Image (cartoon, rainbow, N blue to C red; front, side):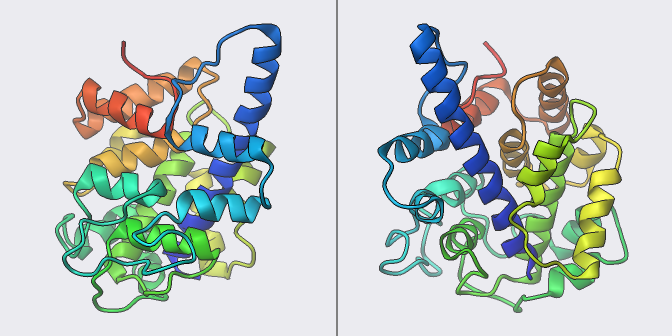
Length: 278
């Protein structure tokens, strides 16, 4: 399993859990006449509307929402080629939009990414090489959307650098999930429930990230220039906004990454969660 596929499985599980949870919360709040805590709009509202419509299974719902590349999930071309601006919809589209496409080695170079992915762990190179190719014309978001829509490896194999970016995003999501001081069973299921069979190196990677101390500064130091918005976005995806510790962690991470409040609020709006700054 490539790290791109692993990230797609984790992100898909998180978004499904959050979207379905929002349906239940919103239904309960509307019956009680109260307002939702979420801003409205964004990926999670798209999923909420899909859940309420009752059309198709969860796999179809997730594929339709997140497989929104150029030709749409399951139809047309999933990749725009070397002249494409990146994925045009779904989570991959947001990731490409906030970093301008994320192609090639513009995000800081393979060496820096491999060092940051596991904090310099010995398995970093091996994991990034798995299921990779030397080069491709795909953006990171296109590959992620395709992997989400297919519930499998993307049609075009990622490069080592793209796999390393996926590993860094996984690290960011796990750090964020622990921001309130723990990962409870529901959070563990949300992060790992869709992974399926992992080999020992992949399991060791997940174990190490689960056991690592929460440290926004350390994570930010390992983020190559240009990937700061992506890392923050994936961190937001893993947080429930039900504790002060989570909000404080996001604030610390935003500061450590050098992201301005207006950029942070824009990311929150794109996902469909409450803003961090007024």
